Length: 304
Image 1 (cartoon, rainbow, N blue to C red):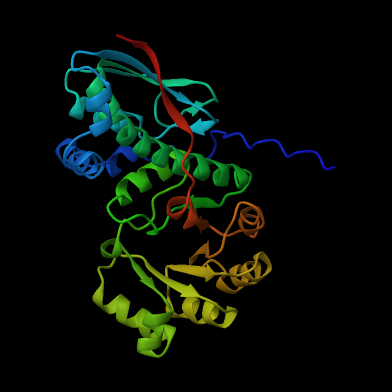
Image 2: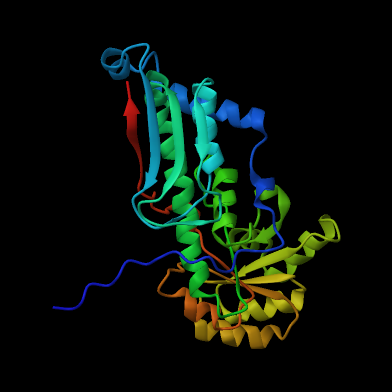
């Protein structure tokens, strides 16, 4: 029988040093509106079980523990859920975003009214598990290409309403944020090209109608398209679902006239080859679109 493959441990590598990811977080008042929506969705009219089982004057002391190795992201947001729902609670975070937490580590301690803390528990855990899940997966991708010059970037493939928290988590985990939305960049894809009839015409249209400093990127499926995009003056050329071999050929064709991006179907077991092709950046949608939530629990230490 083959030996069981050891669990992958997160390693802190390739986090962009020149980016403060907190610019991606919502202002405090906006965050509180989000928390209100999260709680309303979960609690509804009342927390029926807690109100039945827990005395009104009960107090409790909880510790939030990791049950696997993770990269921390969103710890203050998870803490703010408790502070907002239970203002009289004492909340102390025991870890910082961007740090590694080993299995069994305590990351937060919460003391206060038992009813309120239990009502807030799931909402706080949900957002922290979600954000740490993204950061942890991104860190795994980043560690696979740490020996190359390729930079990992995220995409717009995020859960609606949680984009900025997703992108913040990804940045904490080790990648740079790409477009925040459709408003802040020109990315010419196959349907745009079809409307104009050619990459050359599409790039010319974009160049004529966008500010001078706006980067124009073109998605290419073939090396013929790569050559056309380079001649048309694209600033960035995306290799869409291309093999590492094809990308190497594309980079030779471009010959320094544009930056390059690898995208499409990139997985943990394929990203190393893509990065070693010499591509400048690699975008991975699944990091924010389908990262598995990590395992974190809230355990009672004292109740009375």
